[in-house]
Amino acid sequence: SVRLFEGTRASMGEVSFGEDTPTAVDEVFTDRDHQAQLQHSPQSHGGDVANFHGHGGDGDVGTVELERFFRYVSEGVDEVLGRATQRPMILAGVAEHGTTFRSISDRRNILDEMVTGNPEHLGARELHEKAWPIAERALRKGDDELQDRYHQLVGTGKASEDVAYIAQAAEEGRVDTLLLHPAPTAADGQANLIVDEVDALIAHTLRNSGSIAVSEADDA
Image (cartoon, rainbow, N blue to C red; front, side, top):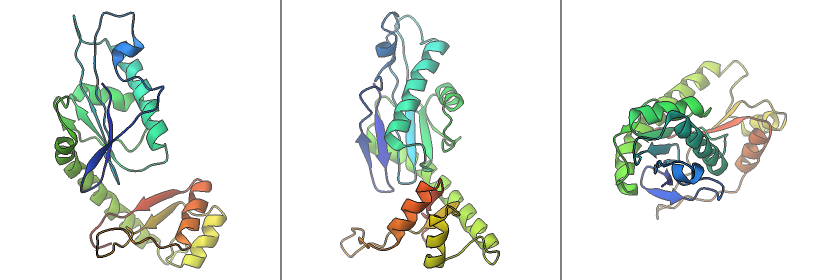
């Protein structure tokens, strides 16, 4: 079967694929004797996780069949998560399946490091425990690179913390990356909902093909 998960630092939950996404290889190749299953799941807030496992009746699914199935899965992931997300995606499963999926998908957020082994019997909690450390390392590395890039550009006219200046630049399509800090939380642990010009900044940035990055650094 095919499963999709999104997660945060604290937890992971299942997300449904669209109706057009096959849930198993034998749904795509009904004329084959192969009875194969692959499992897919992503983890989020900065990370997605995809895991795959497969087995067949009289032999493993052929390379062509597997690649075709992975194309359906890749399209299904794009439909659910969108193509603009920069959250790292982590594959889980046997290494060769990870290699095949990377070669098919054009998502640049798929990490090289993966959760190895057969994830068929792993639940959301087990997947989260194995995948989040990988996502966290990637997020930390991405934070460091973004912060370094920002500091290099400060004073050159290509980086600013002036909200009014950024708003104008975003509206004019001159923002490449909008770097945001996580929303502050209230005493009960819930995010404070602050309605301000940040929503407009995000909308203008995305409308003009810019990207949004949220720093996960503890000291951000």
